[in-house]
Image (tube, rainbow, N blue to C red):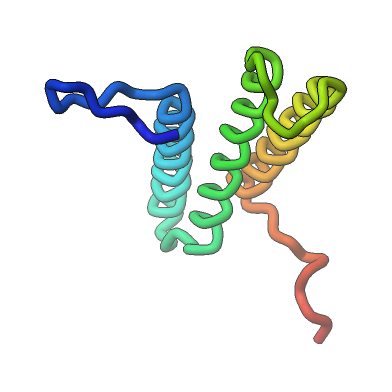
Length: 118
């Protein structure tokens, strides 16, 4: 959603902007924590890890938003009423998979199964 402008020139925050702010704040916090740990180890932060943390926190906040919107919105647009059950389940799956990825990245666990054979 886009913030609406009032006559005084100030922006009125919308519900969507709170999720964006929360997601960015969480991503910055996790990246800062990761960078601090890496610098203490006298290593440089890996760009791949920074991108993975950003993607995971974005998906985490998207999952929360899916649940909230599905449970509170009067109209779900093109979705049928029965989808009000499945949308929060999808949101929960996003949250759980994102949290798993965040923990995996913070612990330094790699994707060993994705590397090409030697």
